[in-house]
Image 1 (cartoon, rainbow, N blue to C red):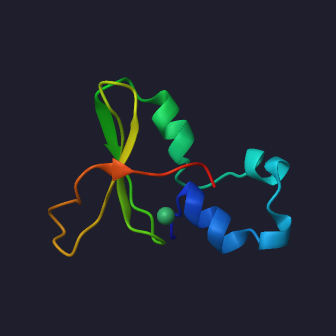
Image 2: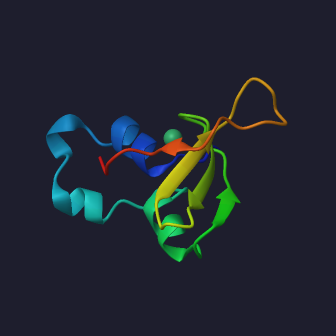
Image 3: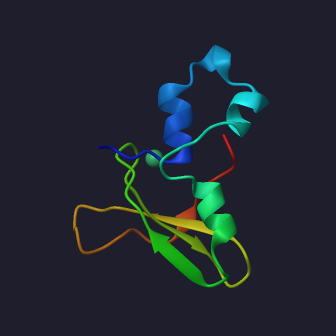
Length: 88
Ligand SMILES: [Zn+2]
């Protein structure tokens, strides 16, 4: 069972001509990055693993920013915290 994050579901499973706001609204990714972020208290993060892009953790920073980290070649270490970018 592979899990995919919001952006990967959008880019892999939604054809370009099907990309409407309604489709985005009804997207149900295994790893719903924006929902997980919304549910996190500030300063907390949660691990995940996206088979598409290697997304490995989602954080809500102390200032309320959405930050993510990606898997690296070293299984014990994630990348530095970075921007997930804008909604697709
Ligand atoms: Zn992904």
